[in-house]
Image (tube, rainbow, N blue to C red; front, side, top):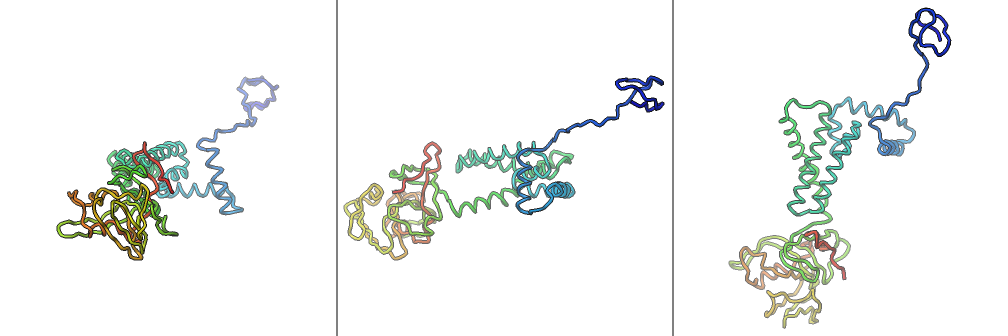
Length: 342
């Protein structure tokens, strides 16, 4: 081992030079494997797999460094934009610990909110999920640079909350409404164990390939109208399909008759507001006869039985007025169940 001061060649194993007593320095390479902080065994292989599939033959390591450099060069703006998908902005910035925090909080609150959807508690949870999402976007936007005042951060989070709610979540709700819509029932439907105040779901696309069948519980729109002093407000109603287009529906002796044939079954029982009376209705080729359990709720402050003219408005929806087929009782959660399909 050579001394760096006097260049004397010493024997191996000595700590000081035998000639000048200088401290001997070891100049041998040491194999050290540094810890790979901020890496994951799940996310990185997935990214490499996606890049290899989308662009075969590309140098994945070069792509990773170039893409990360572009993200850091643009600052937190690009990370904030891609943070519309929760966790993606922090993934690009390699803040994996923040991904776990924000993603778990957002997914947990959103899942609980959807589980208790159409309730006050569910609305609070969904609002908190949107707030966590907004907080993650602001965190990705600022990065390590923090505002001098807490008020600035609060204003940014609130503005991002409004932008996310109107730009993302409201549009997602509108898109989901193309397939499933919900309504609170104001009447009981005992055959399907539906009570007053239950929140039921209707499948909107149930009748794209076929027409409503007799006995199905449908959600349909009711028009605005009135006879004399009785006024009907536009809204939605849920009722069983009794008559099909082109048929004649008659009520006599507290029973339903369709083209002269009596209907039997719990779904075709004459409701209390029609008992003791007589009703004859001829359906056009585009009309159905739906039977809500109680139509008095559609009046403003009235509980009397409606006249035949209003019964025609309430119980004879057109094909285009039928929104979809009710398939599930969603709330309350302890009575959640799918409706039986006969």
